[in-house]
Image 1: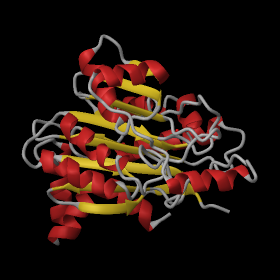
Image 2: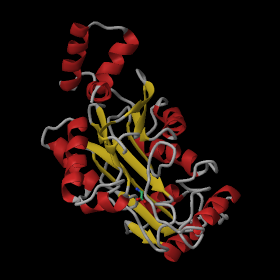
Image 3: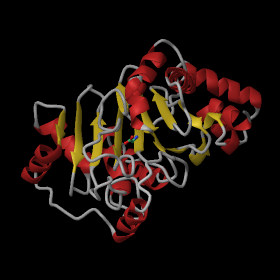
Length: 331
Ligand code: GLY
């Protein structure tokens, strides 16, 4: 491991060199400038998986016009939520074992304000409901029927989120009813997005239809602040994808932010938490988890338990989808 790991480790700095053709010495100088926070890379948006590319485009329209990171992450992940072809987020998401599409999402801004919805049904854009929870209520998290009633009171409308394609997949699954948590670049889950805006403020968003064919009522890491997402504007932000139960057990995203506070780079922090997950589970067969992280300087990292995780990056210097480094190959 690897060229890929090395590529990620250099992060923005390496990408800058690739694009501008700067020499190693110049790259080192740029690195020092970034480390010294002279030239923080901002604005920037990073997000999970290949669906992050389109999400980043929407976020970039806001960031490039000096818009806020909060507006950018909401607009970005809404694209994925509304894409019926995407079978792991929002409209078109694969249902639980009873054939119900249930959605989890959360959002967090640079003032440690956050909002979340879980087990929400028939609302296409849960991230925007989560933002309303943050901005319009005294609470952080609403679930199930209460979250839906709140959404309706805020002007959201209902929609059948189970597409014909997703229904067919579920019916096929019912023939064996084997619950498998295979997560790879074809069959993935969450979109998580982190952004740093021109003002130097961070925000994050995370949204999913959860693990396909989960038990009705199951909630994963994605709506749980500190697990699926965490933002601390003094330090950085992180979000997670993969088997949510494993992320919750280690408070994954909050821990990554704390590791960055202690001086780790985003890449080092993601690696440490992936290894923590591995060490805390007796059996990691098929237990895929990936983290992405972004710090106040616009440096980023990504790492996963298994190969196949990728991250989309968008900044003035960078418009990429790159493979994350990882600990294990699939058998
Ligand atoms: N990471 C998404 C979930 O476990 O539901």
